[in-house]
Structure formats: C-alpha cells, structure tokens
Image (tube, rainbow, N blue to C red; front, side, top):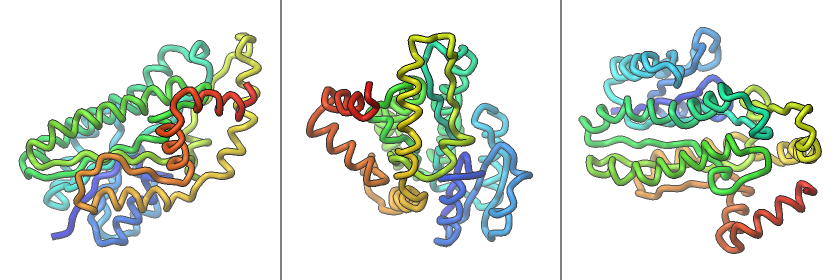
Length: 271
C-alpha cells in the first residue's frame, strides 16, 4: 500500500518541491494551501490531492485531513511546513502582526498536529516532521519574532516526541539554512518605522547584508531530500540539518558557544 504525506504550505517553495519529490517516489500526496484554485502544476500529477488548508482556520484543517483520509485511506506523514518570517525592530510591529507571526508559525503548527494525532493514535503509527530553521538554534539581528517562533517549534517537537512514542509515532525536526526559495519575497514580512530613529542604523546594516546571504543560499532540493530522508529512514533521530551553512553554524554553536555567535554576528553585520 502506498504511503501518504500531508503537506501544509504546498503552494510554493519547500512545500511545493517536497510534494513533487514525494509524488515522484510513488507516494500519495495531500498538497494543502490557502488558495488551491490557483495551483496549476501539482494538479497535473497523479496521486496528488490538492485541497484548502489555512493553518489559521480550524475547519479547513479538519476538512483537509478528512478529505485526505477519504481519498487515500490513511495518512502516514505530516509535514508542518507552512510559515513565514517577520523581521524588523520589535517596537515597530503592531500587536496584530506579532500575533499573526506566532499564530501562523506556532499555533497553526500545533492545531494541525492536534487534528491529526487521533488518526495516528488509531493507526499506532505516523511521523510528524516540523520545519524549523537554523534560526531555531541561533539568532540574527531584527529577528526576535521569527526566531521566537522557531525556538518554540524546537521545544514543542522535543517534548512532543515523548508523548507520541507511546503509540508508535515519531517526531522529526528539519533545520534548513538559507534556502533559495521565495522566503525573501512573499514569505518575508519586514517592518520598520523610520520615526524610531534609534533603530535606523541597525536596520540599514542588516538589510544591506541580507541580500548577500540569500545569494549564497542552497537550492531547494537540499532541504527536500532531507525531508524525504526524515520520512523514510525509520530512525528515532530528532534533528536533521539541511544546507552547509546550517551544519557550519550548528558546529560553531556547539563548539564555541553563544558568546562567539554574538561576536560573529556583530562583526558580520558591522554592529
């Protein structure tokens, strides 16, 4: 029997490319997105169900899961991929945008996971793969909101694994470095009020360097291959890094510690 993966945020970037990879490997794919009527490429592929799921809409979460089960019989893997990055001085963000960042990247992930857990419990099997980031282990300037959500994903995943192991389920975390997707475009929410002049210098310096980091980003298939490994290796391994930069920063963080990362960032961003 073919295995089935449900992917959130499959309209573009990592989510879309992961859907294509799993389909090519013979999997059934439930590719979910907020506006499925706009999807043209995935709809041409066999064994792919395209359906609406907005992580901020509980009914859409339940409906997508039920449609997937009705179509393919069961779901074996959940990929919590939907999310975006809010960057800028914390003081410049209105509260509604703070809530949106955490509701999308954290509460949405929790709601989708909670909705699928009864199915995994019934089957006594299932794998939850949460997309975190190297930004869930270390931080860059102006990312208090984004990094806050990814640190939360790390903690949620670490603790949740104890619970779901009781009925044969696994939790995996994929930690990409900089990946050449639209993260810097449609998935990037930058905000700065220039009237808050005390932040102007750091904003200028950080935004000047960011494009250089994006130019050196890994290709999307670097992370999709790691996601496939996490879904299929059968191991109880928790963390999977994707990209040379993620592995390098992780090594430096472990070997040299937090203070070194801080001094490195200040030098890199000329702060």
